Amino acid sequence: MALQGSLADIAFPDVIQLVSVSGKTGVFSISGEGVEGKIYLRDGQITDAYVGGLRGENAVYEMAIWQKGHFIFTPNVESDQITVTKSNASLMMEAARRLDEWRVLQRRIPSLDLIPYFQPRQAGQDQVTLSPQEWVVVTKIDGQRTIRQLEQATQLSAFEVCKVLFGLISSGLIGLRDTHERPVQGAPAGPSATTLLALTENVRKIAEELVGPGGAKSVEKQYRLARTEIEQGKGMAAVQSMVDHLARVISLLKGGEEAGEFLRRVTPLVSG
Image 1 (cartoon, one colour):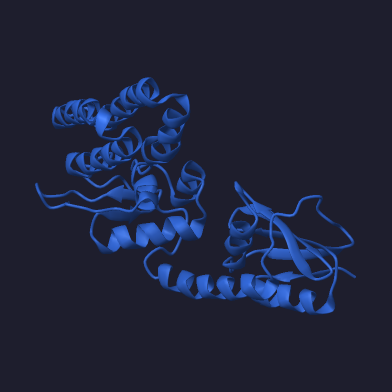
Image 2 (cartoon, one colour):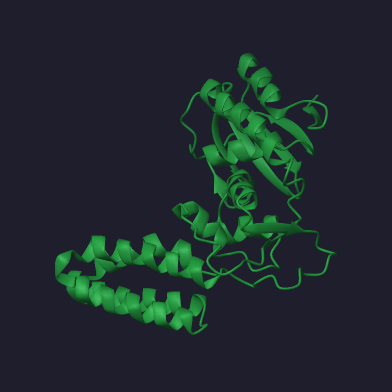
């Protein structure tokens, strides 16, 4: 008889622990939060996992925080890939930590079907310093995407997206609304000019790091042009144009490999 049950009745890390102790080989199929995933074990050790666009450890952590859904264990099924190398004990310790943090996040973010939007801001109010991961999330918020859709757009886990949103909500930069609620009057459709100017500064720093002093003037030229266009109301298009021009500059000065590295680092920050 297959091991199966509801995530509402038992925390999934506890189920993993039970199977680990028994040394079983097989696969957990887990459905919850509107998606399905799988966790493979060999002799009780997790070897592979995937859910949505996540694979490996991050997939394990993503499913470990689900509190609703269903799981079933099918014995003697193995994956032909090994994407998890940490011990089950280490994985479950981190999963338990994230589950505790997830419960805190849910106090402000009770559903993944809520829509984040930018709060109306006073001039000069939103001087912000964001991490690269925060930029990835901020530049995907358009007042229409749900948190679940932000996961797909950013290729981050629900935990990572919600952790970023929690901080942005706490700072007053972002609000949340239900899908059936009308958009907040006066809420900007995207990041404010001040936020975009800060983003161009991040892009400039990455470009300067790659081209060195010899290309600083070319980088500065594109940076100033982007700032002017943002102040003229061109929004994210100005930032994207800056990135395109800088990629060509870096390719000419340093070669295609460095230009590729530049795009690899900045594309997650600016792509829609």
